[in-house]
Length: 255
Image 1 (cartoon, rainbow, N blue to C red):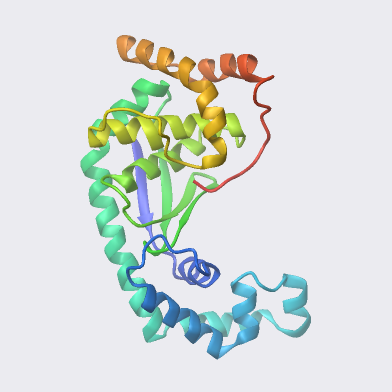
Image 2 (image 1 turned 60 degrees about the horizontal axis):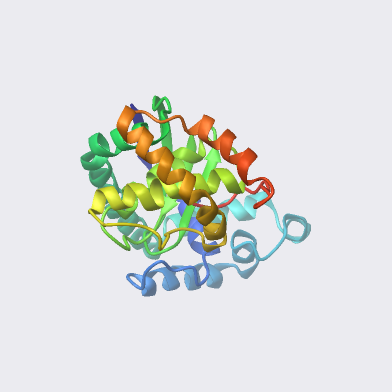
């Protein structure tokens, strides 16, 4: 069983919110997010620029200190404007957790059927504000997530997306397979949609997914029939078939 521990880390939430300039997944609560960003900028432009990734560590620490940064983060954490961001993220956590638990029996069976992976691990999910884009596997069975619910069961699909990053290497072929498994096939099954393409996911991977699709459809039919696929063997076969068509480059990418 995949067990997800949903958490909110204040410092992580602060840094992600400050660094997410115009990376909105939704207009909902935009004013509250901008108000917090403006408040943080008003307290210390220097510290703000560092946390917002506009200032390199070497430049920051040439004229700043760890103590000043710690005081700055503490002040932000205790502010009313951050309290609003925290409350909205807490509501998001409750929503995501309820959706995950409701969908888990169906989705875990579907993922197992499609992959044959041993779905036995505990992972930590650090949630960020739902109106900002976020999704990255951090390693050590931990990932971060935050996004507006663009369509039904969106959170469930992308939680599985990040979970699968912990089973695959960080290359284009692996990411394309993850997108086929979760962003597309799982989405269709959960929402009773008819077919794909058109694909959902990172557009730069769509040409590779187009190349994989005929093999994927055959593999999927066999997995349905037997009740268990073998995604690792399938990927190895794909790598040989598609090497000339689509070189695989290592890249650790969000979502």
